[in-house]
Structure formats: structure tokens, C-alpha cells
Amino acid sequence: MSHQGTVVPPHPWVPHRAMIRRFCAEIPDVSTLDIRLFDDAERSRFDCQPGQFNMLYVPGVGEAAISVSGPGLEPGDWAHTIRRAGAVTRELTRLPVGATIGLRGPYGRGWPCAAAMERDVLIIAGGIGLAPLRPLVRYFLSNPSAARCVRLLYGSRSPDHLLFAEEIDRWRALGLDVDITVDRASLGWQGNVGVVPMLVDRLHPLDPTRTEVYLCGPEVMMRYTTRALLQRGVEASHIWLSVERNMQCAVGLCGHCQLGPAFVCRDGPVFSYEHVAPLLYTEDL
Ligand SMILES: Cc1cc2nc3c(=O)[nH]c(=O)nc-3n(C[C@H](O)[C@H](O)[C@H](O)COP(=O)(O)OP(=O)(O)OC[C@H]3O[C@@H](n4cnc5c(N)ncnc54)[C@H](O)[C@@H]3O)c2cc1C
Ligand code: FES
Image 1 (spheres, rainbow, N blue to C red):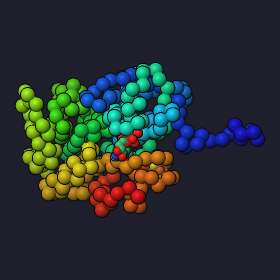
Image 2 (image 1 turned 180 degrees about the vertical axis):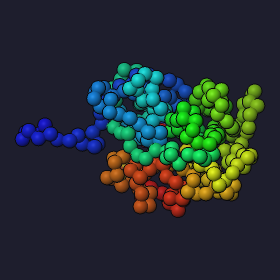
Image 3 (image 1 turned 45 degrees about the horizontal axis):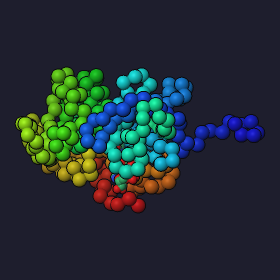
Image 4 (image 1 turned 60 degrees about the horizontal axis):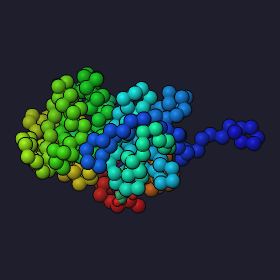
């Protein structure tokens, strides 16, 4: 309340208090945190769509944009899968369960699930790019009529870097078609060796006129994968990808995440390839 008695709306940059409720080490340098808002009313309103992200704040260190990788194990918790990159992500993955952090969000436009209706869906992930796609895989598994069929193509550096490996086995058991490849095999690996675009080249059958693609991974992987998809005849307007740019405000005010005329935080992070192709490989402004 202000001193005149009027209610001051919360500043869009002010994080809500949240608690780390569960920590799960996934693969080298990557962990999943289940996070819960303290406030009951905020928690009951809070809902994240597949592909959206939150800004996680470590007091005294800073903020980082982290995608929601699904609901947490307990109702009201939300999972965030984090790769240690620098100060904020290192600290986030070092904090103990029970620690207080800040959270604001959810932000951005996520995966357009409705675009998959009556279409053959390809979900394509590289490395930790599977984290923002996991809620989408789960969505299609629990809504079988949302697409004609769904296939996951996933690539990682090595077998030890395969994220959510046990969950992928459960997806397979539920009938999901999954093709995996690794850049470097290790002893005992009997699967594919090579990069993700190779999986696209080998896809059979593929009807490009009714294929919808959801893609997330390192930018170089997305570049070569989109090229392979276009060569197979998939239309740019049916390829959706999640773009990463450095974030600050996350609400379309500071211009930090600008990509040509678009702001990744507000207009993305998910864009159609048709929309971002001319802008994708420009540097942050
Ligand atoms: C929409 C969106 C969703 C994201 N989702 C996830 C997620 O689910 N899990 C996850 O681990 N990370 C995610 N990231 C990336 C994450 O925000 C950055 O890795 C994080 O901000 C790094 O902060 P830091 O302080 O730990 O490292 P910093 O010290 O800020 O950075 C460490 C290194 O990473 C580089 N870097 C920082 N941010 C980015 C970026 N956005 N893109 C490319 N390079 C960057 C820096 O240039 C530097 O070299 C996402 C980013 C965006 C924009
Ligand atoms: S982060 Fe400020 S405009 Fe996108």
C-alpha cells in the first residue's frame, strides 16, 4: 500500500519468494530443482505452459532464465533443469533443499500444441534442449488425439550425457517412437553415433506435407537440423524452435534479448523458423 492508501501493483521485476524443494543430479553439470512459491494464493494461480520459462534469482548473485521442465513431484512444485554455465546457475545447483530463492514468471510464448492437430509430430532435442521439450512430450503422451503420431529424435554428446534416460525408457514403453544418437560412443553403446541432422536424413517414412516439428538445442544443432528438415521438404512455417538470448527484464522492456524486431522474452522464446530464419544468426543487439 502507498501512504495514500492505494494498492501499488507488484513491480514486474520483483521476484516472488520460492523454496527449493527437491534436488536431482541428472547428468554431469545438469541438475533438476523442484521449486515452490511460498505464497498460497500466488501458488494456486501459478501455471506454466510447455516451453515457457521463469527467471530464477539467487539473492546477492543474480538472475537466470530457466525453462520449466514440467510439474515437480509434489503438487504446486515446478521442475527446472539447470546446466551449470556461470555464477547464477552454479549457485542455484549448489543451494541446499529448503533454501529460499526468488522466482518471477512464467514468461514467453511456449510450444504451440494446437498446431499438431492431425499432423505427424517430430520432437527434436539436442543436449539439455530436451528439458523445455519434456512437458511437450508428456502432453502428447497424455493426449493421444492431439496429433496423428509423435516421434522423438534426441542427440547428446555421449551416452553419459543422455538427459532423462529412465524417463525416455518409460516413454518408449508407453509407445513413443524414440531415435537417439550420440556424438561419441562409449564402451557398450550399440545405438547410433552421429549428429541429430543424420537422424533427420534417415527418417523413413516422412511425409513433409503433414509434419510439425518442435526443436530445441544448441544453436548450431538447430541450424543444421532445420537445414536437413527443409531438404526433406518440411515447410519453414511448420518448424518451431526455442531461441536463447541473454535476458534481463524478461517482460519486453529492456531490449536486451532483441532479435531484429522481436523480443525473445515477449514474442518467443518459441518462434516458427519462417519467422526467425532471417534473424537467427545475428548477434545480440
Ligand atoms: C528462454 C530461455 C530459457 C532457458 N532455459 C534454460 C534451462 O532450462 N536450463 C538451463 O540450464 N539454461 C537455460 N537457459 C540459459 C540460461 O539462462 C543461461 O545459461 C544462464 O543465464 C547463465 O547464467 P549464469 O549466471 O549461470 O552464467 P553467466 O555467467 O551469465 O554465463 C555463463 C556463460 O554462458 C553464456 N550465456 C549466458 N546466457 C546465455 C544464453 N541465454 N544463451 C547463450 N549463452 C549464454 C555467457 O555468455 C557466458 O559465456 C535459458 C535461456 C533462455 C533465454
Ligand atoms: S529481456 Fe528485456 S526485453 Fe527481453
